[in-house]
Amino acid sequence: MRYAHGIVVGAVLPFIIFMVAAVIKITAIGADATGLEMLWDIYVYWFITSIGLITLLPLIIYFVRKDIFRQFLIYEIGGFGLFAPLWLMLFTDISGDPWYSIFIAGITDGLIGFSPSGAIEGIDVSNLFLIPLLISSTILGLIFLRPSFIKKYGIKEEVSVMKKPLGTAEISKSPESTDEESMEIDMPDVNAPTPTVDSVANLREVLIELDIQEPTINLILNSGIGTTTDLVATSAEQLATISGLDKRAAENLLMAVQRKLWFSGI
Image 1 (cartoon, rainbow, N blue to C red):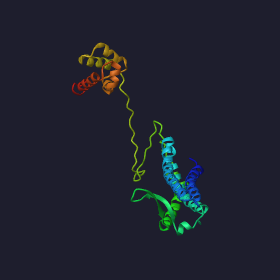
Image 2: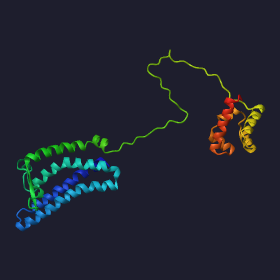
Image 3: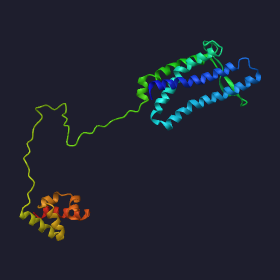
Image 4: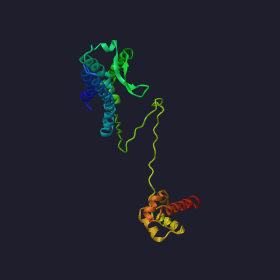
């Protein structure tokens, strides 16, 4: 939501509310008792409508454009806080009373409430309550409508996670480590055991002793496994895929071969 649009929304809402209230007040000038009673009913309806308007718009935004809900709420609160005192003084002056009269005498029948009998009646707003309210409202509006405040609290932060490519690693060195403490370790090249005729024959004998069927033995040997070491290093999932055995049978076969390696001197 653009900043200018938000400011306009925050300014227009209180403008409409106080403008209609001022029109009702101006219409009441010179009216008879019946007219005053009718205008009072209109004012009561407008007072309730204003509250509904203030609360309904954010709800509509929440369900229609949830992504700008927080921004709209900040603009509405900030707009009412900053512009409501200005419109109140302006329309007080337009409706026939000096704008500064609200700071001296307050507002007569500015609010509505219920009397002990249950009837709706007007409630006066004292200047002792109105003055600090208008000052705090203006300060609150200035805070809420600051671009930095809206950016911080009105816009959802999107955290982007950068993934490192596979095969890269970072080695961190502790602050206490020094060049003297670091050492290089040369590891000798270790070659994987190479299958030979004897190792293949030896592996075949082991598998036959473990009652493995000939087709399964051929599948294992044809896969490139030519030594008992290669077979033991194979995972159960790989062996099951190679030999056609189920995973449980492959695990049992690997454990049996390992036992023969460890305890039979193979």
